[in-house]
Image (cartoon, rainbow, N blue to C red; front, side, top):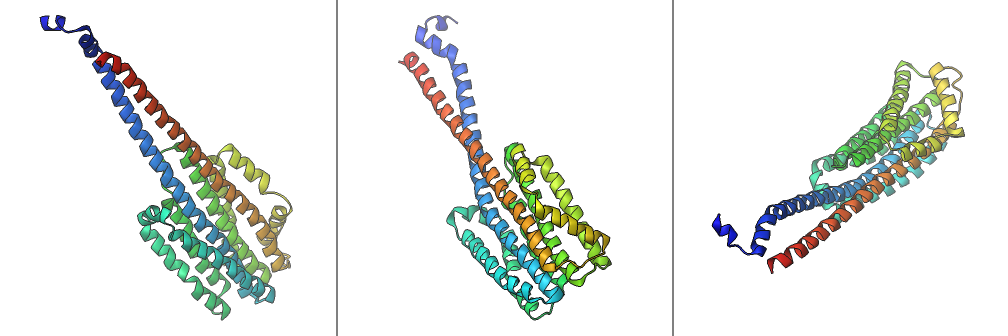
Length: 327
């Protein structure tokens, strides 16, 4: 103990403050590692959203091609034939954009981590050419065409759960889940468009078609309910202010005709055009939600950057505290 009395004042101060300084250094290290981990997670999420956007744009065009194919096969109307030819061009454009995204070096890591899923999606997408050939040659029924296209879209949308990584931030996780629920509801609306085109072409719904139609509407409502529970206030407000108007009201009117399975004399082209207007409103919401995820992600990244700056400032102040003592 006498040796402690022989220590210089500076040494005694260092001895007293060392545990405190060590604790502060430990906290700075933990905070730095947490910030780095969160920053990397946010960067990975941003790349996942970029890739998923390319997938969802492609799915949107496949949805329209599916509806046109169903309408054409149901009544072989030239109007559907012309629309189908034009739609295939739009689908191919988004397919090219998707393939360009796969070649983007910035997305190489997220693609590599989901390679098996992407390989399977690519295999399904390559089947579109065969489906088109069978549609052109009237070798598929309307229901068969719907099922073939739906298989592709279902896999693509389910793949988004894997491509968009789970975030460490609960706000981002909720926004991503809301986004995916909304996309799944929109996909059912796309199938409804195809089923309705078939029903109005035939002028009736048999038992299978009626079951399919009613199931689709119920599924849309369920996914929208889940979406509204999880989405933030801005997303909910945008949805409610966007998905309304004459097209939405007309779809409801024609839905009632299908539920009653009576007076099914509406022009299938009119049904297709009207529900397409409604789905374009849904696409507007989809784009808004995509931007929302990016905005929330960017906000969190900015907060991480500020925390990292705070850590640097803390380190600087700590050095300034230690310097006069150690001299």
